[in-house]
Length: 508
Image (cartoon, rainbow, N blue to C red; front, side, top):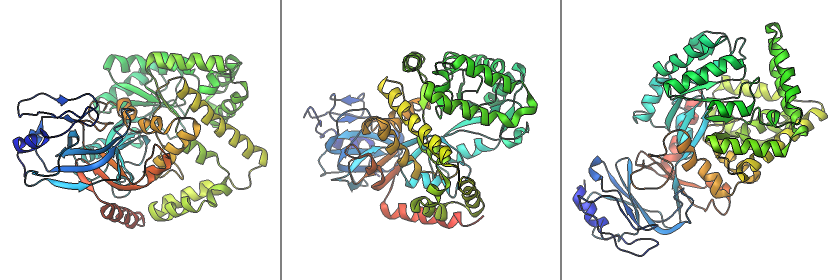
């Protein structure tokens, strides 16, 4: 294995990409940089294999223009240099991979996932698709061990940021108050504070809040989270306006729920109607239906001025916007559309376990033969969500990419590429969409210092493509290789990984 001094000596002969300036690097030097030119992280004492990805085009995730003919040097699980280096006189033990004509990007983050415990299927499917980090949105007891297995590299898969158990109000749609099921029902402020304390004690990275929390319980959760210095994120509770959620410090707003409702010209009347339904526990079955109806109806009462004020509030508070366009689309499409989509059916047959597969198919069949007016209404709402995402992006709201995989017809890894395409269709540039899954996603989940850009010192999690995604975002599917924790996963290894996941998925 090459020594640190040997590698630094070789790197010292590198040429700056933009500035055309040579870099002098010594064992004792601090970070060497020449603006947008070659950059070297001198901390090569982390150990591990040195891998040189030679002469590719680097899309570094910072928003900078592509760097052609650029080499990325990895040592162990870190990026140690980005620049131009002569591919001669390399120290012994250095592995060189020619990526000429290919595009080197940061690995992707999926900021809204479920099913992380499926280590033999979901984990490799994420990784084979270039998703090297996930934010798992519900953390039942035992998921801390899964996070450790992944983050320590004991099991191949994406790095994981982990939510608490789902904290919801009484009569939650996701089951009773049994914490073993991953759901805590908090009906009082005291119970809300206790749920935050439990999440903190169990080592959750953030508290997951949900739709049925009462406003006073939600306020108690926000206050306790601030006291313990832990984020809370998730759905905006149905009785809480988006404005109040932002002011309370909610870190991310998922699925756009509550945004149209909170920017309707008659929002006060709509929230009054919601409170009336929530006041009667015996009408719990009506809650979800009423929320959905009022939300979709609010599209026709949308006030752009109020939306701009809301977006400005999000910018001031640093609130992240998580549109999850793909799951909103698949959850509302007519069953006929889903069952006629050969690509979705192929993914279903190959990578989803039989019991879950039948559940997903039943979900689609339940939407067969819906009245045409209901289908039209659903399509209108999905289109409106895309418009709202584009408006938020245009206003400078920070946006992250998440899929909500494990929900029917939303697949780990594969659906991230669909999400990126939908973000571009909504109005984001390809660069902005990529950043929603790289730099900005890493910042959102608290890993911005370690991940999200192709920068010396950051984790060696990379995606290598055969075609330029800035020309067509769908080119993110032209995966040539993935790098995870510094390990280069070739096309052949990716195919083997997918084949193993397919085999595992056939076991119920």
